[in-house]
Length: 606
Ligand code: F6R
Image 1 (cartoon, rainbow, N blue to C red):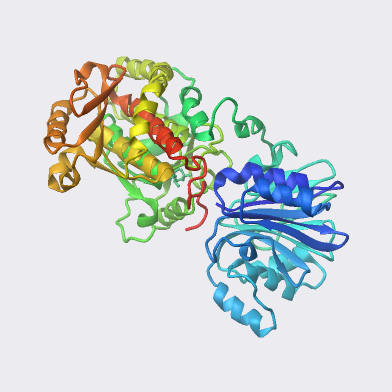
Image 2: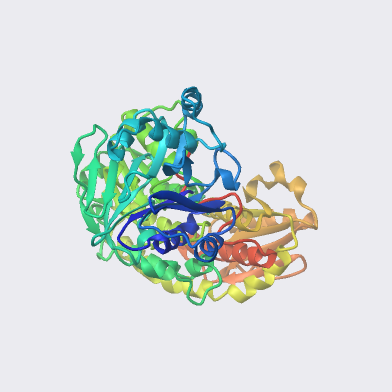
C-alpha cells in the first residue's frame, strides 16, 4: 500500500527520502515521487517506474536538492498509475502533499473547491486535500491542517509542505499509519519505522486523529480534539537487516528460509502454557469466555481456519472464523462471552481493524490480537495481544508471518485446553517438546527445495491447478492455492478432497495438475480414495506425502516425501513446500515475485 516519508534537516534530504521509499517498496506500489523546498520553491520528480528510476531522475537528471521534503510510493485507488496522478500533488505551486488512504467525500470537496476557482489536474482524491489546505492557509500550516482534516471523511495519512514555511513538514493520520522519527536537529515522518532505518532509531507512534508538525527544533502534536499531546518516544532497532537480501534471490525466498528462526523466536520461553503469555488480564478473560470468534483477511484468515481445528479438538471451545471484510458489514449475533481474536501480520489491515471495532461496538469486550508488529494500531486496539516474532516481512506474499501465526494459535489452543482441564501435565510437556522440535523438522522440509524446483518447471507451463487437503490440512491447501495464484498468476483453487465429486471433478483432465497435501492422519484412507477419483479422470497428482503414508510415485502420481507425520502441528510443516512450489513456479515464469502485480503489502484501505 502507499508509503509516506517526510524529513526536515540541515542537509540535503533527497537521498534520505529516496532511501526511505526504497525501504517501503515492499508494501507494493505503481508510481512514486519526491518533492522538496528548493530555494523557497516546491520542486518535484515523479515516476511510474520503480524507485530506482526516481533515484536516477533526482540524482542525474534534475539534481533535486533541499532540506525539507516529502516522498511517496502510490498504490492507485482513484485514478490510473500515470505521472500526473503520482504524488506529491501540488496546489498552485505552493503546497505539496502526499497521501495514503481514501477520502470518501472527495467529490463534494472537489465541487466546493472548483467553486473557489481551483483547477484539478489529476484524477486522485488526494488533490482535494492539497487545494483545501491551500485555500485555508493563513500563515500557520499546523493550524491549517488541523482545520482541514475536520472536513475529510475516510482514511488518511498525509504529509504536507508549504513554500512559506521552509523548515516545516506537517502530517496527520486517521485510519492509516504514520510514525514520527526523532533525530538530532532533524526530524522525520514515515508510514513505517522501517523506512527510516539508518536515519534514526527513535520513534513516536501517532494515535488516530493526531496532527503533527516536525521542524528542525522538535515535534509538536495535537490530538483529535486539537489539544497538545505527547506520544512516548521509543527506541526501535533491528530493522536494518530486514531489507538486505543476503544470498537469496528474493525476499520471499529469504523469508521462507527464515521460518525455523521465526518460529523459534515465537515459541514461548517458559516451560508451560500459561495465560499470561497473552497479557496480564488473560487469565481472567480466558476463564470468562465460552467461544471464540476469529477475524482476519487473506493468509491470516487461513491461519484462523487452521486454528479452528485446534481450538475445537484440543481446547473443545466453539470457534467461528470470519473474513473481516464480510463480518464488518453483516448482521451478526454478538456473544459478549466470546473472545474476538484478530490475526494480522501488519496490524494495520483496514478491514481487520474495522471488523474489530465493529465487534467492539456490538458489545464484544474481550479481544486478542495475534500480530507481528508490536506498535501497530491493532495491538493498541485490543485488550490482549500475542506477538509473533517473524521479523519484518518484505515479500508481499506472506510466508513466515503465516507459520508464526499458526505457532501462536497453537499455543492459544493448548493454553485454553489446559485451563479448561483438557490437557494434563504429561500432554502439555509433549506439546511443548513437539513445538520445540518444529524448527528442526522445518529444516528437513526446506531441504526438499531441489525436488520442488523440478516440479516447478512443469507447473510454470500450466494455467490452472487444483489443491486438495482434508481436515486440518484443508486450510493449508487453500493457502497453497493462494500463494500460487498471487505470485505466479496461475489460476488455482483449493477444495477439501471430499468435495471433489460434488463439482470440481468436472475440471479434472490430463491438463490439470492436482496438488495433494497428504499427511498420515485419520483421514488418509479417505484422501487416497479421492486421489483415485482424480487418477480415474486422467488428472496428474503431485502429492506431498508424509514418509509413513506409503504413497509412492507411479504413473500419473508424483510424490515428494515429507518427514514422518508430525501430529497436530503437521500443517506448519505441510505449508512450507507449497510456499516453495509457488515461489519457484513464479521464478520460472519470470514474475516480480516480491511485488506481484496489483497487490500491496499492508492493505490500509478498504
Ligand atoms: C497473502 C497475503 C495477504 C495478507 C492479508 C492480510 O500472501 O499476504 O492475503 O495475509 O492482506 O494481511 P495482514 O496479515 O497484514 O492483516
